[in-house]
Length: 485
Ligand code: HEM
Image 1 (cartoon, protein in one colour):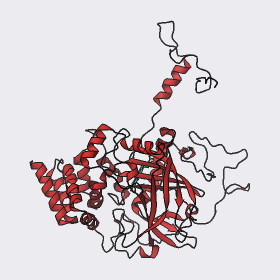
Image 2 (tube, rainbow, N blue to C red):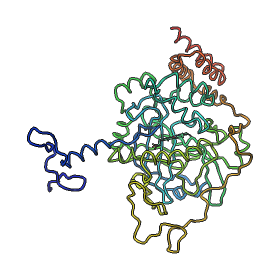
Image 3 (cartoon, helix red, strand yellow):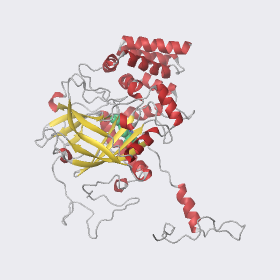
């Protein structure tokens, strides 16, 4: 094998990579030392802004295979026939901590999938929880501020975490979920993924359905207790990353089975829960799971920065046959992600290999900008319409239209007959075994008892009482015992 030559960025050979050029043997360094200047300057620029949330994550490539016919529900080409296979990239993440945080913490996990379909990339950017803490995107920056590091103390503060929840009764369902047994997954392989929001599917005849996605892990659910999580996070901050990387390197390919809950569009208005409220689930007795296919992860990225740190998922990347619902949180997210990518990665992030379409190409009149790598062929027009055979619109809507009515204004989400902030949190509590309830109560009390203000504790206790009287009583007793003990 011929010896590889070390070169500068411009391709010129480097003579010495151990000693800087100096004026004489012991003298100061020379401005003409291009290699030293370039090496230091480039090193200074290695980091980019981390994601404002979900900063810490792990990614892998894989594929999705359709196992069941869903062509009566959606015209999406990648779901059109049983056996059809689509390449994909997945990134899992924790939410609150920074890039250097630990994996084994109590926190929701991100579950983001980019399907490289022949009709463009479809991004399903979900979590390992079927619900969320809030239902209006206007609250998201405040919510995240309360969960991340405090600007004065520089660390997460129970006072902030619980003060936000004291003012957000709609969070009680998700708080119950997070403080329960699934709150600390043992690894990314051992948790489910949920689209969480309601999405719209449209079939070839134009019939509209509302769907919720469920990826069920085929590895089985495995979680850590609060004590196990604390110990592991202290011993090995990278436990999730190591687990995923090593499993795939060993040829043990994790997989998930995708199901959807399906609601015919006409049933949405009359359903007992607002189907577009992200703090609510649809009980399976109302809308059972229908199997769609299987997601397998079988290849680790070669370079974590290029492929995981620079991966950009946007809930707004839909394909024909799949579209948004009027869920206000989802509507906010349709804006937030691509905007974050333009800030974090630049306007041409869609040209990076991990983000670019693979089974089709992007063919439009967007041009130029910082770091534009894709050059259009000579003579290609940069305006539309044109007389030169450039790409043109199809005229076919991607999804069915949604009916709207009423006046503009800052409205609360409409409440359906069974909607309140607490009923489903209580249902989740009542589903738990005695042992699960005991652990849930201990986990909540462990956090809530650290709060400095009595009024904030009281407001949170009121939420648990409202969900279920026994739940409230037990949390209250556990908090009191810890504060007095
Ligand atoms: C209005 C509410 C929300 C807003 C404004 C929001 C905003 C953001 C932003 C700005 C990022 C960073 C994107 C980047 O820099 O690449 C992000 C990441 C992420 N968000 Fe959200 N988010 C919201 C709610 C949610 C919900 C409800 C879910 C799950 C159902 C979710 C799942 C994720 C995931 C998985 C990532 C990481 C994606 C990746 O791996 O690159 N977010 N979010």
